[in-house]
Amino acid sequence: MAARLFQSILLEIKSKISFILGVVDASGNIVSCTELRFIGETVESAEAFFAAGEEEGEHGGYTFKRLSGYENGVEYAVFASQGGDTASVVCTITAVAINNSKLLYDEKHDKLTFVKRIILDNILPGDIYIKSREMQFQNDVRRVVYLIRIDDRQDVALVDLLQKVFPDRKKDFVVTINENEVVLVKELKSADSRDIDKVARQIDEAVKAELSAPFVIGIGAIATQLKDIARSFKEAQVAVEIGHVFDEEITIMNFENLGIGRLIYQLPTTLCEMFLTEIFKKGSIESLDEETLFTIQKFFENNLNVSETSRKLFVHRNTLVYRLEKIKKLTGLDLREFDNAIVLKVALMVKKYLKSRENYN
Image (cartoon, rainbow, N blue to C red; front, side, top):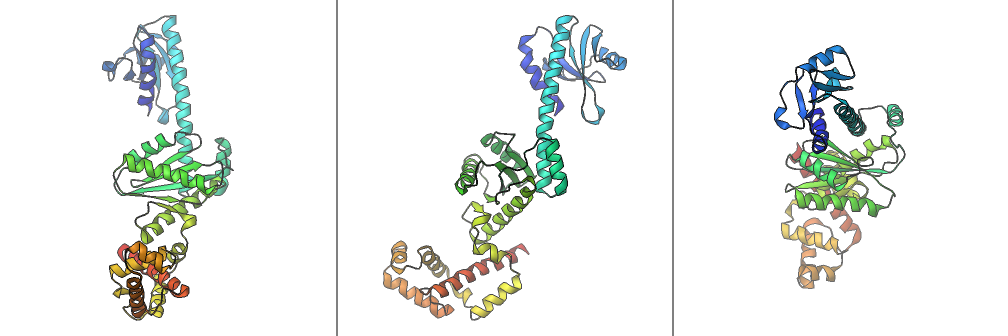
């Protein structure tokens, strides 16, 4: 980080000065410089400057200004390739600019680390409150966790994309969980579900436009305090898992809209198997072919309305009635009766869940 930070500031200053300006370490090695060709070279008089323990001064025709506060006690100094008041002023101003930029970077980095520790449950609830006060981090605002899971390893590209779409680094935090998962912790002004969905659509559109890999977005419930971010993250994970099981075509899954799927997902597999055995004759649910399953799906989508379903399927009404009678014969359930339709709907979802568990194991 240090070298990149130094270089970005030096390049801003380069056009305003007539001498060489750079940063050296305690051994005199040039780590950043307005003249790139000198990076890696040595300023011999720098060692004398560091040895003298001065904050600023001239040695061997160079002007130096010490930088401090870097990891592992590493020492740096800004240098100018000449002496005099102008070089001294430029070195001092450059040192101030570098130190201020470092403070901003550290603050941002520390907050990201803090948020990640909360998400992964690596910090005690009591410590969250204390740490948030120290970092001047607002505790009681609405935040929602969006988990983006992407098939190929594109976490770096995804992080860059999300930071571009949501550039407010003080309120929104993009955190890498692993090589396939990135989290956006988004601050919201209201609890309106439309605002939550709007953010999800922004992510969905951006990822589709910029990245080619398949992905899915899970949305947790609103967290009203920092400690609740961990819960929202777990809910987003559940939303992704459940959504993948019950509807592979959808890319946005909201934990609060999972309905029956969430209930089934929490049931033991043995209980699910017992349910199918009790409801159906052995092998009856497996006897439903793709055409029949598609008919059932469309019948559910059209609220069990025979006329509307036949119109959407482009078949005669009597043809649909024949198919429904066939389903009744195979399963013992008449989908034109609401209670029977509910049983079959749940059964098909349970079957999908059991199949997903088999694939997982």
